[in-house]
Structures are given as C-alpha cells and as structure tokens.
Length: 356
Image (tube, rainbow, N blue to C red; front, side, top):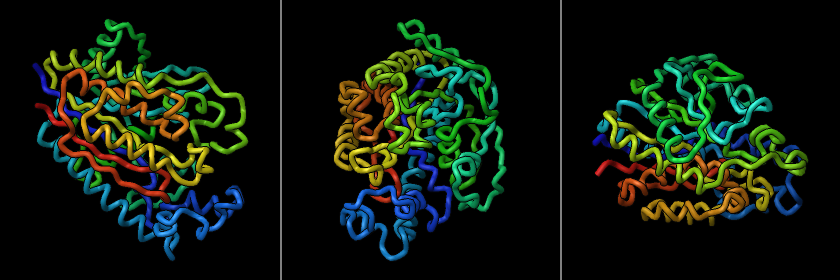
C-alpha cells in the first residue's frame, strides 16, 4: 500500500507583490466610485477592515498577513520534504486560462510529461505590479516535470467509478500552467530552495456560471455578473466524490502521492452581498471549523449555490482533497490554520493531513 499526504493552501496572487501594492484592488474600488455610499470611505467599513487599512492603505497589515501565511506554508513544505512524494497532484481552478469559449469541461487532468511556469505572467495580464518580493524578472520561466503515469492512474480511477474525465497532453491557449498551479508551486518554494517533484495539474471549472461572461472573475463587475449566467461548474458533491474515487486507487499503487488542494476561501470580488469589498467571514469560519475538526463529509452536503453565494467558488478545488481524506478514513488535520483578512480579497488556509 502506498502512502498519501494531504495538503491544502491558498494561491492569492497578491502575496507576490510589495506590501504597498497588496491592497491595490480595494484602492481601485475607492477611486473608481464603484462602492455604494454606505462603504465609499474607509471610515464606513467594518471595524476590522478599518484597522487593517490603517494609515498606510494596508501596507503594514499586508506584511503581517504574508508573514503569517508563509509561516504556515513552511509547515506544508516541511511535510512535503519529509514525505518526499513520487508525484504531487494539484487540484486548482482554471480562471479563463485553458478553459475558454471553444471548450469548457467540468474538470480536466493535464497528463503531459513537462510543464512551464511563468509565475508573474498573470499579474501583468490583469494590470498588477510587475515587481515581486523575490526581485525576479517579470518574464521568469521555470520548467516542471509532469507525472503522466500517475495522471493515467487518476483518469482510470475516475472512469472506473462512473466519471467521464477530460484530459489533455498539452495546455490549450497558453504554453504555461495557469495561476492556481503556478502560484501554488511558487509559494511552496517561497524560500527558493528548488522544486524537485513531478506534478499532475487537475483543473476544475470552479467559476462555472461566471467563467465566460466574467472571464473567470477577472471582469467580475455588476454589469457582467448581471448577464445571463454560463452553465454551472461541478457540484461540491461531485468534486468530493472524485477525490473519494481517486484515493483508493493511488493508495494501492506503487507511488507515494501528495494530494494538494489550492484556493483561498471566499473571495471579495465574488461576494455580491458584501458589494465585492470583503469576504464572507462567517461562512469561511464555519468551513474552516469543519475542516479542522476532520468533518470532511460536511462539505459534500453543501450546495453549489451556497458556495457561490458566499463567494467560495474555489472551494470546489478543496472538495477532492476532502473526499480523498474521507475515503481513506483520515483523522483531523495535524495542522489547520485560518489567516483572515478583510482587506486582502480573501481568507487563506493552510492544512496538513499526514499519512497514518
């Protein structure tokens, strides 16, 4: 029997950029007049958000938030080093990158034997800062090995369990991995010691009804979100059951595999009830409490509509990990930390669920 390591983390792109740039999204909302009168000045915001904004437009909070999160990432990286997997399967969203107008699957396994990362390409594409905290060139490209044999085992497990998985041997629309995978690999190597494990990118259409009309949330304005929705993405139950189907096959294989869920919890730019200004704190705290308690199956029963109402679209990326841990009978995580921020678009989580 092979062992399986479970990891979960967030891939918030803002962590790459200087402290003073991390709250740029909120600064833009203040400047463009898109906020309602009740929230159009910092003194009208909820008290915790005002405190985070402070007198420096959030720069000091940004530094603290990144430092706390990266400390958590160190726990995840240490678990990877100790486990030393044969492959790392990463469940991440495709945010109008490879899933576009010509083909939108509910999920797709990329089964190539090598991939490229351009960790700073996405930020430039959406008008972000080109500088980064590592001082690396904006056009940095990193080669990553794939694990096609493990990818085929994942696809076979899904097919035999009644799923109809899509797969691709190359990336459509761009020749480098999407932001969810690039950011995950960049952050897990934030100390720049190198990445040596082959990966299987498992992309999920977490943006569903907003994928095409709002370009995966990149154009998530009231105007675009008021348009006719696209077909929905897969449900939490479906994603949970995918993980439950994959885990036993991998546990019986010859490979030691790390399963990695990557996403922040609710995203401010998806949370309509908060005027796209701050995340859904109540829902995120509830989801984190369930995860920390090892109540993995609780997530299976949450509706897709509830995820989307809370701005938690990307939690679909976490559901396969929780389904896998449930199928393997895993106890609560050994480490599970919630890093809250009203100002920095989302609440982040790092969790480590080691083999038993």
